[in-house]
Amino acid sequence: MKKIGMLGGLSWVSTAAYYKLLNEMAQAALGGVSSAHLVLESVNREEYAEYVYRRGDEAAACRMILSAAKSVEASGAEFIVISCNDVHRFVPEVAPQVAIPFLHIAQATAEEIKKSGMTRVALLGVRKTMEMDFYPGVLADNGIETIIPDADERTYVDDTIMQEMVAGKFTDETRTGYVELIGKLAARGAEGIVLGCTEIPLLLSADDTDVKLFPTTDIHCRAAIEMAIG
Image 1: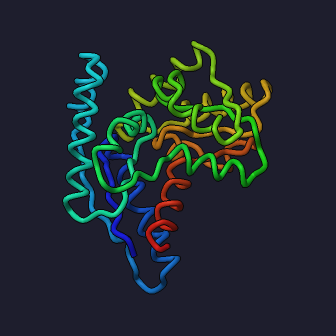
Image 2: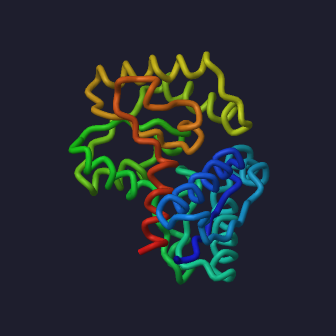
């Protein structure tokens, strides 16, 4: 089994979900009490938030991710998994500076969408994920059109992630709000919904809506175990 290098801490809540899923999936695939072979570099979200949200210093944030990537590489990891969707915007800059590959969450998600036969999905995530092209661009390269929520909806999604979910707060009120938003996006033509923030699958499940959900945490972990086992 290949050694997985996981970059976590963004947030610790979703990182814990990754660790649990990776080990559950490894055990299911390998049998017995098998566990995933991995090394975790957990960065400080507060420091990352200082750079990105308060200083607007993307270069400093990118250096944090590069340092974490080099750390897991030095620890013997054979490929890298980032347990956060929006941090993947740094992959094009970081990847050439490390010798091991990244398993890109958007590409893994695109492969899952293609299996479903869908070609038009809506994307939920933090503001940068929804408004920048690094995620919809990967989907477009795979023949998938992305519907982006409108400005007020993006604010709602970003606020609930940043103020609630990254701190481990998941409420029925917010769940209801997301289900209503998903209904609106489906009415605009979305065949499915990409839960493009690794905290959102901790809020929502397939039982909450009739619209097809693509939970990126689960998808990414499954792809990582498949890559690790080979």
